Image (cartoon, rainbow, N blue to C red; front, side):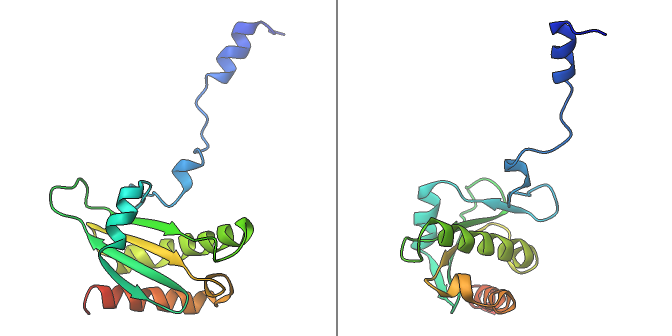
Amino acid sequence: MDSTPEAAASDRSVADPTPDRAASAVSEAGAGGGLETLRKRADFLRAASARRQGMPGFLLQARRRPEGEAGQAIRVGFTCSRKIGNAVVRNRAKRRLRALAREVMPAAARPGWDYVLVGRPGATVSRDFAELRADLAAALARVHGK
């Protein structure tokens, strides 16, 4: 039995094969999805001042990034105000919006664009997920002028 501190330290230094929580989120830029998560307030404000499309389940804000900005990935942000409800309800709404973005955005969104999905009181949490999916596809088509 080797119970020395060096042996215990060497066991801990082995690379952990499980990814960390941040790597498994929406920011799957290398996993074929091409989605990155917006994190800076300035990015949210720039998207809010650009195109918007209201849908029954959420509000979509979209902005084409200028050529000078880095990256051609699809960037997505999620926000839910306190009007939606308490923290539990807001987090449920954001989880639904993230799942929606993972399903629809890789096929329907355009690279080089920023999108923000804003939850609506009552509707984002209670609306059927298939209807939300159809809403997002329609909103993306309208924002891109199809």
